[in-house]
Image 1 (cartoon, rainbow, N blue to C red):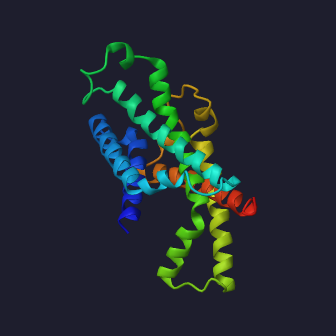
Image 2: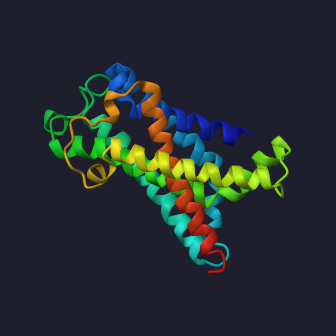
Length: 219
């Protein structure tokens, strides 16, 4: 239960950090430090996962999951590190002016979070069955009912549609190519709508991750 709570805190912090245009800059930096602390606690809580890497067979889905997890860690640390380098408040005096004004460092800091959106979605999708099993047990849902199956397919369709819409509004393709973008249609929306689009993008790639796991379960 504690681990699930920490996962939710991490997600909330990440969504707020990505909504930097709605927040004071110093709050954006403080949230970044809080996220770094949450990541450390998350890794400590999952320390047994690291030791398990040397046990068992490396089938396809396990290899893919480990690769995504490693990319998640590298990406999150890179976002925080580049944020410290271009800090206007908390770390302003620590890093030199060269890094603070370096265009590539700025570009990495604003683009890498969109890679993280994709990775978070894939990560959730690959681990979806046990997570969903816990959720449905908690709600006492009848998994065999037609209403349940129709609801699941409707939810998947909604996530796909919302994720595609959110991707276009945020110009995700350009972001992933590290293109320099000042603003998008998404940044002109309200805070609630902006966060909803981010969640939809995560949901889209969660569906992709789930479908990959489902289609390769025998590999």
